[in-house]
Image 1 (tube, rainbow, N blue to C red):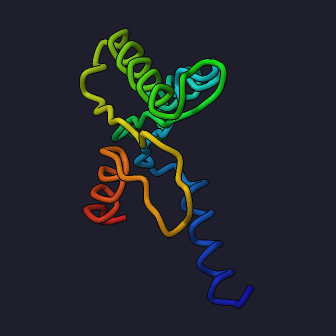
Image 2 (image 1 turned 180 degrees about the horizontal axis):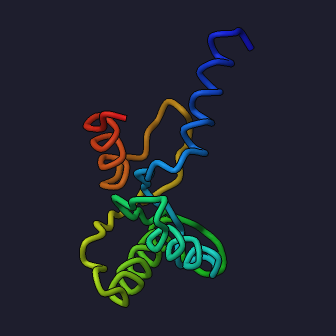
Image 3 (image 1 turned 180 degrees about the vertical axis):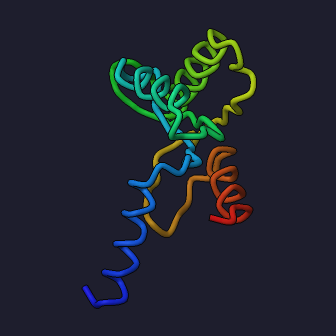
Length: 125
């Protein structure tokens, strides 16, 4: 790694370790396994993170009938979870991709992906 990249990586790591509150988008297959609920609640309750969106990620296993069904189940789980919180309606929830990415040259568009792009372009960080 050249010196410029080392310096850049060092700055990024220092910022991550700093006490500055970080803007976070949580992208999760929340219905798939129980660990996601703990991670989501940790992020929502953390004084070091500002959750700006929750994205439902797809999954395909014995808990779903395919990627689209897995994403919809994760979306519904995120809505159930945020409904339990006093300020849960302040966290926007977006649907993720309805299918897997077939190749790096073929995107799988979704409201969640559009939100990630929009947030990144609008950010001054």
